[in-house]
Image (cartoon, rainbow, N blue to C red; front, side):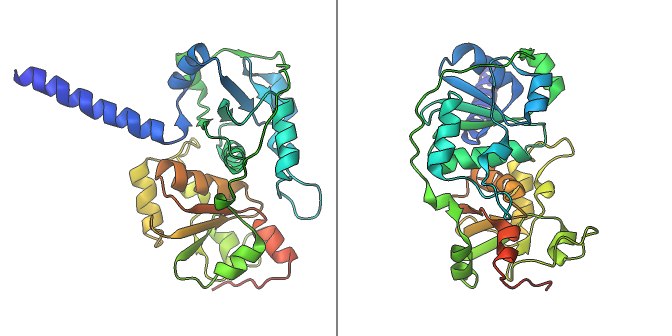
Length: 288
């Protein structure tokens, strides 16, 4: 009887663990391999450059380089309008009601950025695939060099403005005690002492949590417990409004994903223009 009870207990713990993993929009190679076989509504997006896509990619994956989603101009990284983004995704066979899995070069920077963009556009079922080639081999993920030519579909955006903030929003919330602003860049950039001299400091009131602190050496997201310990040490709590920025919004999306998906913090936003737009707008920067 005791043995049976132990089996039930371990099964319950395993089930809870699975539910917890599924709650986070991160998918393992094994789970992804199973989804490829069973989910006919699944669309896979490779957000690497066209050159990298041509070398090798997941069989059936469409190529939407993350760079194609940004506006041209001096302020790098600003996303295009919802209508323009919807056209890009739709022309590649991606609609808001599809089950979507995104992957990049394994760094999770670009997949997280596109994940946030799709969430902003109102896509409800979006996941990030951790690209570990060793795991891919074990899971037997099929890869190819042949380009996928999807049929165009209609992507109807339902903009989720709750996860997006503008420069004006940041100015309005800078001194709000209920808002925490996170600078996701390196500590050198935060302090304005980076070797390239590209940063003069940070937005006043911001706390520094480098996005790399939330990832393992292999680029995977750390555990919920590890991430919570890191952000809590900087005063980042679940009941706060959290605004994340970096240089151009890419690294900020990693912190967004860690907080919103892994920790399930409900009120996390990305300042899309980030440091580059802030400085271009002649806004004050501090090193304190």
